[in-house]
Image (cartoon, rainbow, N blue to C red):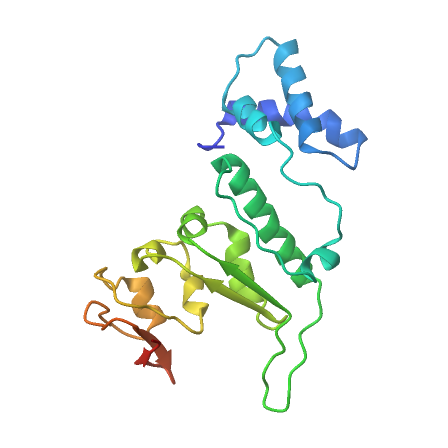
Length: 223
């Protein structure tokens, strides 16, 4: 929902959905939408953000759960949301992150070689990450914080360092390899934590980026 549901809306949703969840195990978004609309119609309640949100979510078929998590995450996927409504895009992204988080919590630790390097089982790469960073979704934090031992590598790409400011908790400090090309954006606290100190990116020449090696910021020529 675009705004947090109020106390009355939350109670209405509970009352509308309690019978559905008490008698069935497999429940679709369409089932939830039908139960909510029937409840509102029976009590002659006005359409509100609860109904408009579920209408957005059920207007089109976003996905079908045809694979187990193990089958899904054993394959490579490029998932785009270019023309999706924000409601649909957010739901799909959040469900994917939640599913990955739950799947890895149940997975054994990734094997290590003699030098202690972990095998990489999965890579989660997020372009235009500012959208997810702004949402402060817990599963993104969990995937960054908790699952390195399970063999997950997370890569976040964004146009501006400002996108990482105010991202929520300190989980971005767990990013092991920050990379930043030239930008006039100020070095905010999150970036200072990433780069182990106050750094400036404005003077970097074209093709050179700043990263961290042995806990110190260094410059690397990429092209």
